[in-house]
Length: 333
Image (cartoon, rainbow, N blue to C red; front, top):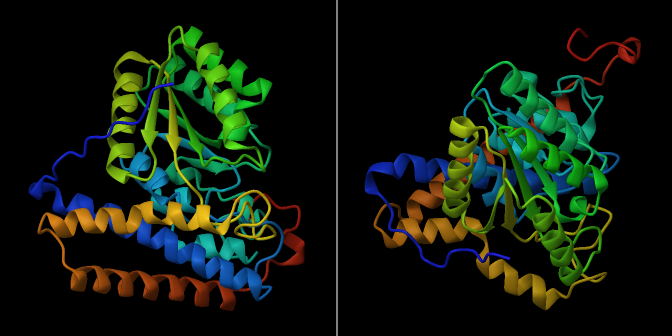
């Protein structure tokens, strides 16, 4: 299996706004998820809730390389992707609260964030269920002679699924403009890292003929951006699919019903991985390059916190969906 690159490219001073934008987006996701955890503990969010804390560089870095008319589909851990795609923190939080002002009118909840206007075609609760759908979207792009790209985000456990292999084989055979981005956060529903890696080796062999496979450091937002940009170029110019294994680490448990550690990892392991937190990592690179100060970071964080606090207030004060909307279509309700 290929290993992530170890070299760290120098920062380009002319791209300061781009770097700060990436940092801000990661901070928005982190603070949003922290507030979601608080709201869940208070009983304001019901059902399942899967947080993205620790993996922010994956969604932010990859989506920064996409165009506004590209298509994205995610698994149930999709709050971060929705925010990185430009969805309002208010409508996403309201959806978590199950309110009528939510992006799915309160009918989807945490696992079904959706906004067709942004090409964000949903979080999908069935593990790996959306991967064939992304292949279908990529086929539609090619059939209509478009130059968009379809991207699937999924966890490493989804590769132990027949639909995964079938979808990637079809994409390779038909040369479809698709990117299959595996967020390998090391534990697939309790699956040990060694087993997850073995499954991924099988996946790479299964579609190695006409598909580029690349492994990326998922704790480095710029590395994720560059790798995705390469995959996007292949998809747009040659209708060639790419399999990206982005190695990341989730600091929270699988869901809010799962403790941070205790079932399958130790506190020491989590603490060690937090030393690679992508948010301070990017800030310290900017600071070392003389592009940002601690005061700049604190001001940015304060602004983000105010935005997220406003989102929680908006969600909390929004109305519940009317009973007569139970069977109404979300976009005509």
